Length: 177
Ligand code: ZN
Image (cartoon, rainbow, N blue to C red; front, side, top):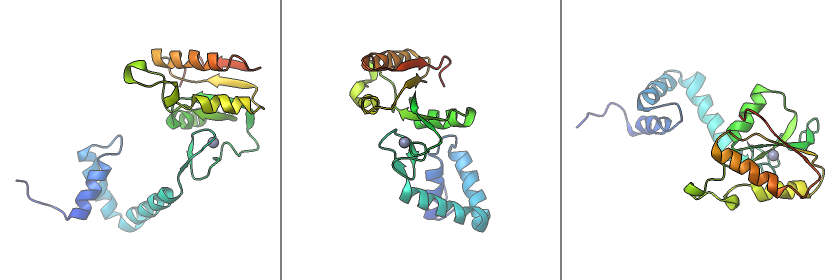
């Protein structure tokens, strides 16, 4: 049996860090040690930032973005063209598009793609919410920015069908995200 090196609090910190994407047990151990060494500059502020984020984080009931207010910063931004909605699979795609390009539009996060093999149907995604947004008026254009996978394209087809009755311009972002 391996001898304990640290108390349970630090072990727990390492175990949780190891579950962060991009970190494994080895990197988690190194990160934990770094945080402990930089207790005042890093560990304390990080703990506070995590606590505040944990208290305030919300999923926007309009678009599905993760933010600290509902509706989110993007949905309430008066400088954005809210008549254009970019449809993405995941919040990560929304953030990536925002970083990569000045889109200046609204978004709609689906929460995945249609995948019958994995048991993911239309009701598991935020498609009805998208149709409701369009039905409530003011939307002129939908940009579908799902991945160029079979599931992504199936999802894009399905959404296009669901929105067929509305006076809309529907385009696909050619290269996806
Ligand atoms: Zn929103």
